Length: 415
Length: 75
Image (cartoon, rainbow over all chains, first blue to last red; front, side, top):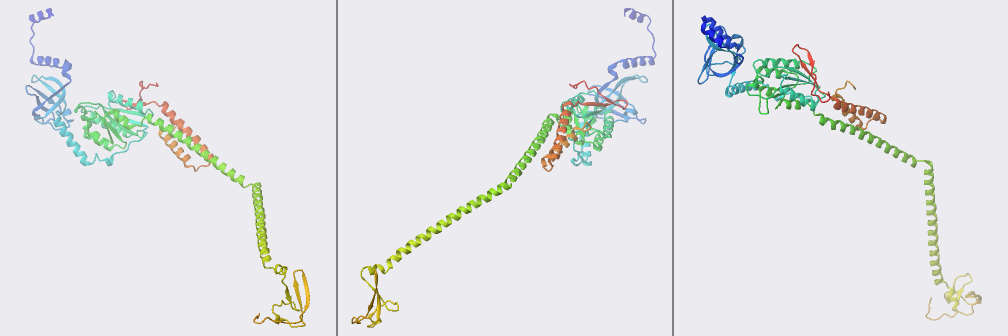
């Protein structure tokens, strides 16, 4: 070091301007930090050249730097920058040897600041809404048991790990097909569209997850791209978006058939949970058993009923039944006969007693007699007989044959 | 049965239970349907038991590569 310093004092070389500028340029270009710079500032001195290259200055309140954006990069601009725009530029710093000026070589440029991004977001959202891209009528239903899930996301990001973890735990019956893509930066939207279209073109994919982990509004900007929105809308398979965190809404979320708040949630919405399928299968198994047992029980009852009916219909039973009926009738016959005889006896007794009361024999026993004429008529008046006629007198214990001598009627007594 | 997806097996199982519950089968048919249902239920349960997530990725060359899934506890 001392030696070198001493020599440089001794033999100080004379450089050309070009040599110096090239040397300075080399210094810039070996500095790793200057090879990839993200720079925020306000555009001024905006000078698009006829060649297509863009020349401008980026400044903040105290400083400024000359910028150039080559035509090839300028062609990918997603907005029309102008003086006064707050932007985030990304590129490298180097030296323009011709003028000895160091410059910022801008490769990508996007609006900075919530205000401008929010405005662009609102404009696109309103335009696509007016076109009907968010219309619920276009939303496709998710398959209840997806066999193959397509995933559009960055291959090495936490979002993918989250999705796979959820699927492993929740529904390992599925298979996953990942179409890796950038999810950030200007290259991201066309890659996302390609990945989406590739998966959507496959018949073995049932549902597609478009996912990205959390980040700043700028980080999520690829999912506010119109091309991405249209690719989601055009897809024939249902699409679930899971971009950023719960609070982040992107245009992709509005177009997707289902919006999930996070990548993990997208995986959950896409699949049933095996924890819920276990009881379902067990329940069906139980229903199967129950239903067969019921069937057999029903069959057994039917068999019982039939054998009971058969028992009742056997001939012995019928004979027994007739025998009983016969016994019954026999009994009733006897009872009826006894009742009739008793009735007759009673009537006879009553009639006998009555007869006794009216019999003339009792009167005769007291000394009265009945006089019969010859022809047998009972003589009740003296006028019915004449002297010399024969009459018969009946007494209680026999008859007398008498001849009438005189007839003496009792005066005033007419019969 | 081996080529049946879980969803298809579950659906067939549901239909089988429905047929058996309808009570319109002869006893012989009912027993055959029951046996089929038992097989389907066992198949579904076995699918749930043994399933492991298969992860494929579209490689840079355009071919599909199956990832070795080290995170699967059953591997």
